[in-house]
Length: 346
Image 1 (cartoon, helix red, strand yellow):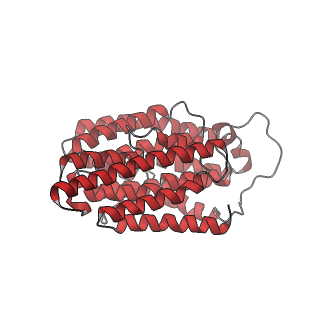
Image 2 (cartoon, rainbow, N blue to C red):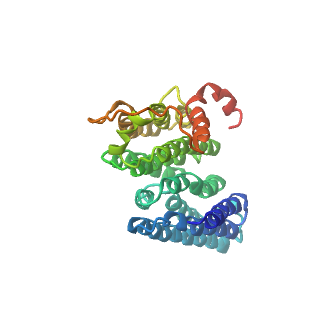
Image 3 (cartoon, rainbow, N blue to C red):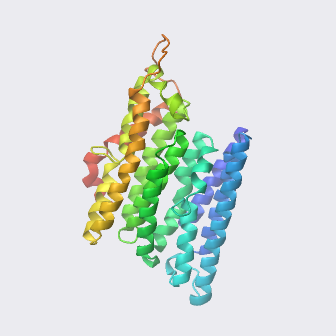
């Protein structure tokens, strides 16, 4: 892909995201989502591999269906209430259809089937965009409509997402699929709290995006996409592998890393809302995800290949993204001590 084409598609992605997150009218929000979908498709299919073409086709079909449902829910709400404003979604059927549309856009269970397949067929940089930037516009719409949505339905979908994200990621050997199921599991944590404390959902999303960006950029630097090749990285880049270990533990939500902060706050808020059983269930289900994070961390740092070659270890990596990885790793692992400062913004 030429740099000019890449610039056009990246600019379109930023434009589509900006239009959606800054709009008050359903039509402009829908137009922004469509620009986003059309801009990411060439980035998914740029390798021309059959798997990449298949991933682009699956992505287009699911996103087109979700956009049609979103437009249908907006039109139904406008038909009954005369309102096109995003925050004035009051009709119950329109709310139900919108929840389904946004769940499909995000990859929230039970509309999650497309996400691991699309991520597996995409390059690592595009997979990073699909996991973070592409989820920001639908997450914003979910945030804006959260007072109108059904909290019971969202709770069931959230627990199902955390369960499926954990269970289906257990026997995977492809790292992109593992990170896709990790994303589904994290979406469950975001969905369960959005009706009660929407700002916590956004905080969780920001921190998840930060940590996931670190993991994807590190994997892109060491050119690794499956567990068998991840086992050989320690002999080449021990420093980077150590950072990957810490970032994966943060993504799992273990203290004293950054990833523990949103989970801690969500469990606290759910308990305040007399939802202790839901909090207990989602916490126990996240232990399933912890297993495959530990498996990734084990492969990255503790496992050595049987035949190691004698060569110099690269303690310094001269890559354009190395400074970005250093900054992201620091923030992905060390933000917990400043949690009182972060809480003032929530």
